[in-house]
Image (tube, rainbow, N blue to C red; front, side):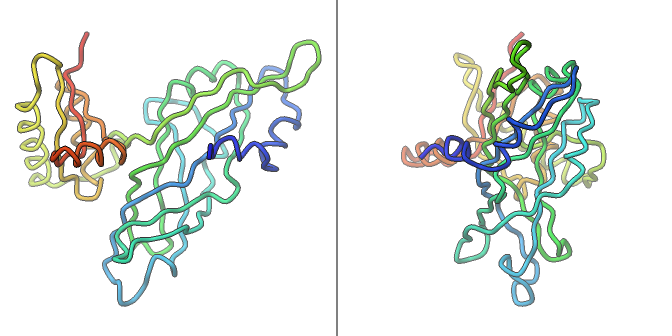
Length: 250
C-alpha cells in the first residue's frame, strides 16, 4: 500500500489545499512515513519505551538560512511496535503531515535541502533514539494565477540521511581517531573500476555517523547508509555491510 497515497485523505492535507496562501508565498506540504529507530536504554528495569514520551524534531541543515516557525515545534510520536529486546522501535506521527508557508524565493532552498530529523525523549537521561529509516515527501503548493485554486506544482520523495556535524556536538580524541581508522580502512576497499564499495561501520548507534560522513566529505568521499532492503539483499549474499562509500567525482 502506498502510504503517501493513503494520506491524501487526511484533514491536514485538506486544509493545506484550501487555506488561502498570501501573495508572494508558497506552501510546502511535508508528509512523513512511520519511522524506524534504534533504542538505547540505560535503565531497562526502571523505564521502557512504552512508558516514554517521544517527539520528532525537524530542522533545515546548517547550510540553510531558512527559518520555519513550524520546525520550532516538537511533533508527538506514537509507538507502533518495538523489538522483544527493546533495542529497535517504530513510531508514527499520527497527523501524518505538516504544512507551512514560506517566501516563494526560498522554495529552491528547501527543495534541494536535506532536512534534519531527530527524536527527543521525555526521559533523555535513560533513553536515546537513533533514526535509521524515515521516508518523507515534499509537495510544493501554489495558487493558480487565474482561478486562485491551490495546485500541486512538484513532488519530491526523499529518504532520511544522517545529519552532518552542526558544531554543537562534542567528540573525544579517542572517537575521532576511531572514526579516522574506520574511514581509512573503508577507503582501501574502494574498487577503482567503480569508484565505490559497500562497507560495515560501527557508528555507535548512529552517534558517530555525522563525524564520519563530514570527515569523508572533506577528503572527497561520499558515505551513505544503506536502506534495510539493500542490507538484507547483500547479507543474503554473505556480505556484512551497513554503508556505501564512493569517491566524489568532479
